[in-house]
Structures are given as structure tokens and as C-alpha cells.
Length: 356
Image 1 (cartoon, rainbow, N blue to C red):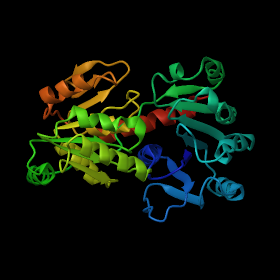
Image 2: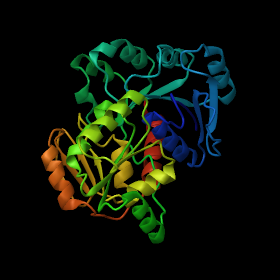
Image 3: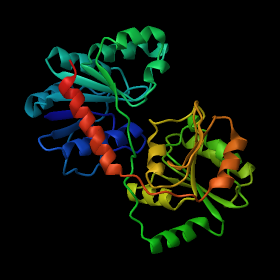
Image 4: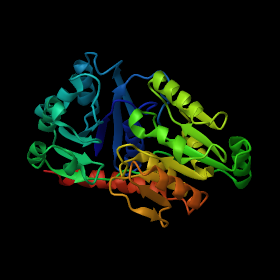
């Protein structure tokens, strides 16, 4: 089977969907008999990929490139084209027409909707839906998150929930390297507390300044930020809360460095303002290293020691602070990340074969 993914970025610096696409595409490419390509925009620093063919026919999704898109379809001849749509889709309306246009030309078009759509996005919703041969959701409660009026239309298209996994590999850091890295990061503090992920206001990052303790903790906020003003505001707020030299903003980290950081942390704290869940790759990335994760959920479950996970309500700052003091440093065996992604790839192939 020949599968062509369409993604806004591959791999990303500011897009978790690009991360997801890269992991899925490479896992699918390892399946015997599968050939995988990705269509995305040009990126000067994108490395070559030995497993996946990369097509980058235009500078941005706003540029005109239909002729080149259909040239790729004619020459590469995919059996399936699979679009990866984030919450607001690609920039501009053009990519949202592509599924329908491709389907009218006889292409089997699948789509993953990573975030739910609101009524204000109904134009994007219907443009994408009418071109879909099948839909994949990474959120198990996706249908409960969209307007009632959307559900009846979604029910007309075959769909499946396929959960995601860690965006990072398992850390291969040695005990000696672990000790050295902890010493360099802690800078005299007793605990290393990490936030990992893209830096956006809805991530609740400012709550970290109250959950962690500047007297005992080194707080490391690792992730790319698109809005420099937001980073300036976070830095000023951290200073006002007394963090001084006990906080570091690392920016975007290479995958191995990010995995090592999560592996040596005493806790990864992700206080998402709207609640997190099984769809958050940051949660998966930290859990996969065996590190304690404290995060939020609209259906908080408290402590789950078998997963090394603690979930609280988004506004339960004191509860998360107490959980951190009680559980920091707890570790379990890392997860089999590659096995999980192979299972995700197999689930996609099965869906492609049986959707009708």
C-alpha cells in the first residue's frame, strides 16, 4: 500500500501535528509492503529521511500549487492520501478544498482531526468532511467535544479513534551521564521540575510558578515559543514570583536532548488550563521515560502509580503542589515506545483496508 500524508509541517518546530505525522509515517514505512510519502511545505533545515519520501511543492499553504500537487499524485500514485488537520487547519482555505478535489479525482482521502471544531469553524468543518473517505480521531471523547449539529454529519463518514504515543524516543542516557546531567541542570537545587511542550497561553505554564518551589527546585521550561511577547511575559511573571536564577527557558530541543531531560527530571508538570488527556504527546513523552507526570484533566483521577501519573482538576494548584512534594522522584520502567507506534501504524492500515 502506498500512503501519502499531507501535513502542515514535517518535522515541526512549532507544530505538534508535524511531530505526530513524522512518527506515524516512519512507523508505517517499516511495515512490509508499505511505501510512505509526506507532502508538506518547504523547510530549509529539514533533514533527509531514509524511510519516507518528502514532497515539498510550495513555500506555504497560501501559495498556488495545485498543478504540482496533482503532478505528485500522478507520478507517485498513492492508494491513500491522509490529511493531518490541527485545530485551526493549515493557514488559509486552500488546503481545506484539497480533500474534496482529490476525492472527486478518485483518490481515497482519509483525515485525522487532532482537535475538535467549534461552530465558528463550520466552513472548515464541512469543507473537510465532504472530502473525507474516513476520519481518525486521537481524542477518545472527540464526538462529545463538537457541537451537536456536527455529530450527525460525522456519523455519515466511517471513523475510528486511534490514540497516539510519545513524540520522543526512549532516553538511552547512561548512569554516569545521568548524574552529570542532573548536576549541571540542578545548579545546587534539590529537585529538577520540567515543563515540556510548545509554549502557548492555554498550556497553563504560569501555574508552574505556584506549584513548584523556588527554594528547592530548578524549573526548566523546554519548548519552542512562537510569540516572543508571551515568553517575555512569562519571564517577568517568574521574576515577580521569586524564581530568579532558578528557572531556565531552553527553547526547542533536539529529540535526544529532550528525552534525556525528561528522563532525569524529578517530575514533569503539565498544568494545562483546559485539561489534558490521552491525546497530549507531551504527557506520553514524559511517561515513556518512566518519569513522574503531574498534569490536569477534566476527569481527574488522582494518583495512578502503575503509570506514574497524577491528574488533578485544572485549577487545583494546591493539590498539584502537594502531589509534587509527596511523589517527586518516583520512577517506573520506561514504556516500549516503538512498539506502541507500530501498533498505531497497524491500526491505520486496518482502517484504510476496511473503511467503506
